[in-house]
Length: 265
Image (cartoon, rainbow, N blue to C red; front, top):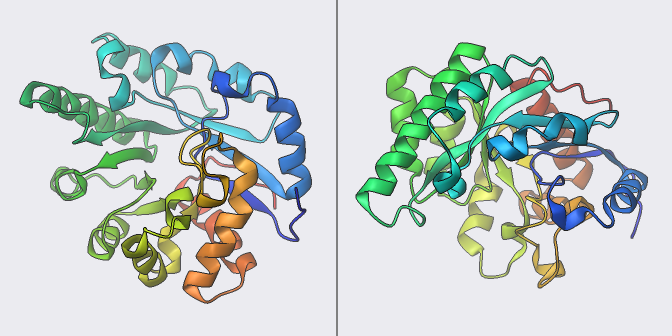
């Protein structure tokens, strides 16, 4: 691994997953030596959320609490009450990973359930004055339109953004930043590359979504935070700026929209 001469922050990764149980400490030490100043771990379920405080303790790892649409079958109605209580913890910096996923919604009933959890979590974010971390696939227009109609004003992050420039600007107008990670490194992602090149710098943050979404240069292997600087370098080339500019702006964008993050550069 190569050290990089600038600080960087992984805005969305699942570094708490069991995939890292055997080498989490080693990877984190190497990431620190490469310039990583912290990371944000989203919540995906009640079971996982109950462990996040212990996982992140005494490290510059921040966490959110939420109920991911991928785990819809395991969520229970009382989990919303649990989430409401969990969000009262001052250490929680956001609500999520909430969202809508058209690929997972294989019938109208599943889509209706996704909408219910999405709306309830948005309302909790508003009540607790916390930003939202969103997983949106194939539902950008619908999700953004509902949040606009509802008057949602807490902003947040659309993780693993792969929509159009128009959709990205619409999200940004609603107060959201767009997570850019390994997907942009794949040669076939030409539309996403053009979108990343065209979006305003105030809309972009860097993420890995570790252990998933490995970049092209790590194809076929487990992803982890150490891949982020090389992804940042590609984003910088697309935007025709220095890599340090992309990294610094990602950190400042996160700090602005996630005020409970205490990122020490």
